[in-house]
Length: 350
Image (cartoon, rainbow, N blue to C red):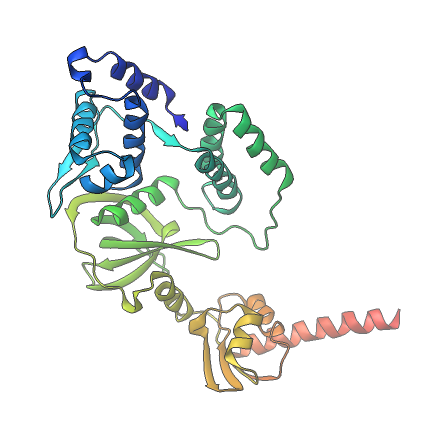
């Protein structure tokens, strides 16, 4: 097991072995390992039923209660919870437990941090700092495996990174979603106006280099999506909420549909003589932008704020279609077609 915050882990082991002899009666010799395992389990969930902890540790619920008491005596903030079976959870406090990872988890964390540094806008520096700290405490056998992965893998970036998202903002919103806590923030709209928001955060969704927050706005009394790069000054309110059912029960699909139907600067609707599934595969368009008309025909909404992206989507079709579009779109497509024709003709002449 890899133990981050080593000084805390060693402190725990030292404190366990220095307990009074009377408090060690009936304990097995694997007590330190079991206590570290217990801490590891408490870190992986917000709340654990006592019976499930006992099953994971291979002990009785009475032993779990004694181990929880020992952790409390050592200063670790473990709270008891009420309910059908009762349980335990880590609370905030001054004595924080060590983060315990097994070999596979340590390697997966290192790879994920390296991937985040290359793919998540605004997270590059933060991910690299965390990766450097992790690699410092990796055992030699794991460090060599992680190094091999870094040296023998490469990433192809197909599009530039999106707007930068503040790492603290991302973490604050993720915590609010997890804890079901109402949060407030300032939001800059598409019209560049700023207004305060008070929302019940439900999910974070990443798409196309952008991050979105799916939330129920308490002021507008409805579901909204917010781009994280437009959110500033997030603040928890310490007021919890009961989660509402999300339309369709699929956060990613709901956000994708809202993105697909959002207003755009240029309108372009193609009637394509091909099945909807074929068009979706060739263009990788969002599901909400493709509407079947019959088994062999569909409509594709190519509308965008960026004229080249419309041309790229239409070029990917590679099947007959008709187009209903704004004059700016058709003018741009004519110019693009002329450039392509000139390039093809010039190549043929040579």
